[in-house]
Length: 415
Picture 1: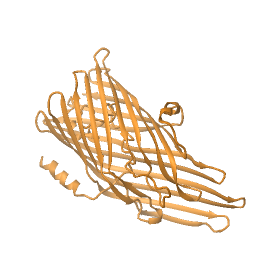
Picture 2: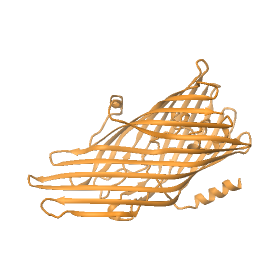
Picture 3: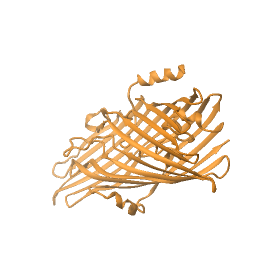
Picture 4: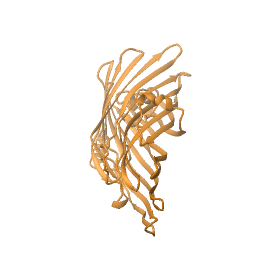
């Protein structure tokens, strides 16, 4: 307990730090948790998800040693400058290319009233490559990959038969690579060509604290807190070239190495788990992300203005356990609201995309033996919003629609 409280005070007093997280629920971590829409603060029995949602649940997982691995195959359908109807999303599933994401790996080892584990997750991933504007007077092309990976240790302590505490310490790594090309045709003999390249690498230490209370045999309360993180390092590079065919030579801005920053909004989650029967479980989560604003590079003319606003997301899920044949069916609904405010009609600086998304999930876990299971399923989320991008040699607010289809495959073993 003393160690737990000491870590709690140190992390809460630390400076803020790292990751992108425009939409915090873009990756549903785990296997059981992902199938239930990420409503997992008050539930256990998922070694790959406990450290992320609520580390206090780790000691409640049955078995002395458990390992689990979940892999996602994401298909992105993103378009700029046009809207979409979410009801038409099913027609889009055959578009694009799948990208493999090793979503979560976790294990558990029990010792007396303690449980310890190692957790590797990819909590944030976004990708795009294509045209964002193609008119008679302007053609613009954008490519970016923005991803995070966390690896860390999880510890959980059973206070008594109804309560437990837990803490996860993650080492975080974020990578952003973005390039844009913009061609503006002023007249038949006058063009303006702009090329921009930007990259950010960032590392930090992040903690998650959890509490679990089994109020009755059927009702469980879970609480988790992810306070500000500790910065370790951040480095960025930036290059911009603007060529005006009527005003040569080109104008070049370049920073080969400059301080870079990213930020994970603090997260506060409350969840309820309900054992409606021996075979049916329901779960409900409410999650709050608090506000913060910053520039992501020390050099002002190379930086984006990243502002996170106070944001709520909710999730609910269910699981039904069939006895013959022996498999579990899971389903979930969740919101994936943007932590960024809406984009101004005439932005003066590139800002975070504002897209409020909704999604659903489902998977089936086949219990192939007493000690092992195989899970297959997936989730979808989508919606419309706005982005600030360079079009026609100036920053413009563009309509953006974003749909992601995910296939999940997972295995779990108990020893």
